[in-house]
Amino acid sequence: MADQLLHTLLDLFPTLKTLPTEDFVPPSLDPATGVQSKDVEIAAEINLSARIYLPPSADTTKKLPLLVYYHGGGFVFESAFSPLYHKHLNLLVAQSNVVAVSVNYRLAPDFPIPIAFEDSWRALKWTAEGEDEWINEFADLKRVYLGGDSAGGNIAHNIAMRVGSENPEGFNLQGMFLNCPYFGGVDPIGSETAEELKLKKRTEFFQNLWGFVCPSLRDRDEGWVNPGKDPKISGLGCAKVLVYVAGNDSLKARGWYYKEVLSNCGWKGEIECIEVAGEDHVFSVFAPDNQSGIDMIKKVASFINH
Image (cartoon, rainbow, N blue to C red; front, side):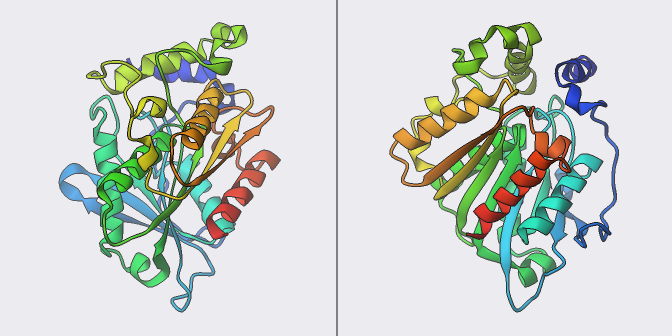
């Protein structure tokens, strides 16, 4: 089933060019950006780890915002150590001037949902507990942000919901950015009903993927899949949200719907949603050097630092 999903993914998203792999890129001092990285073990007993990034301007006398990032891949593919995400985080950290923790949560189907959420929450708590020297010396835990693309955007949202309900001590979650977030729902909305998307079968692919990553799923209107059906959505635990959607992405309607839901549910924060015409799913990750990817990373940097 996983192999079939991989080949379907390539057919539906030609911008991938090649199938996701399990290639590992070691941490490094990146010559293009000057960003340093290292790998840390969070919980050896469950193989939970992360990669921490430090920008070249890091200085112990002036602490920087902390970004906790969750990679995409449909809860099934990719890792924090893949070539794709290593490059993306190097660029993002250099532009945003943040300390970043890229979480390597466990993947379905071997570890079905909610394990990805539990791993991601544990990694956030570990970060706030001061277990790492770089975080202690360079990161400001009063300025914490979450970020993620696709499935990682879904994770970021659900972690922010847990922050709102549990109000954990040790850090202040100020905001989050979601890049083409992977949300769903029983009833099609917006562009999901377009004939072009039906022909591409992208919507069907995303709908079928939910049951693969979470066999216990009752329906796609559970709150962790469809925030619009979550009665506790107004308790989102941060004050500002930035959402990016891509004009050619079958998930773009879900990003706009997320903005509509947060704007009308009683949540007291501010949300901005930006659509980039002519681009495909998580374009800034697959093609970070094109102008759209560069512009998005600059916008995220401004969002975090202002």
